[in-house]
Length: 307
Image (cartoon, rainbow, N blue to C red; front, side):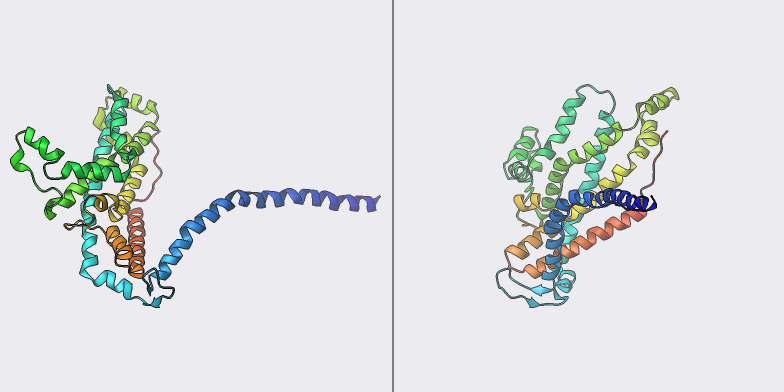
């Protein structure tokens, strides 16, 4: 009898061990395709970019000459490459403008307003357009005797027309204004979704206590969407440093509008300096990561409780 029990116990234990193997191994089968795609199209290209940044290579020669840190030294010491960093300040200031505009309309349209859905569609529509199409539309808007000049002439402001894309003092402002028009819709949707996720009972209780719209924004909406505001600032930092479509389509980087990414693109594909362009891309990635880390340390992601 004891021999039969001992024979049954291993069988029971073996039967119990099989589900454990299933539990620990099966999830990796679902994650494996995503991991393969992530490694193949993200980490492998980043590794290659890092490898190229330490070499001099034209992208065609089968051999690469080691360059050490010469490419990185040139990025930080050459005035041509340091100047393009300053162009990002125009777009960084524009990103604050688009955050403010998007937050204002998100707060207003979160309450009961006539034609609210129509205004939502109007604000979000520019973000749905292709960046190349937006560039060509505003290229015709800003060109001499174009749409903007014609409109100003009809309003009696013809003497104030300028070379909006030809004047170096105005070109970056015009391009930054174009980016505000295009990307405000993204921030608007993020803010509006976060505001609508706040329970309506909180607004009702605030109205009973005599809180007006400003008090509701200050004590309910702003704390409730703090995380989304922080995310918008992170996107603003990375976006202002990696602007490419609008200046490339509208000016090609001429008249002092060459951004860091446009400079990297021209360095790689026009001047055939793949190693130097890779070093610029690595520097841009490190700057974005550093600024994001500083922002997360300065504005920690605290849990917000409104109830």
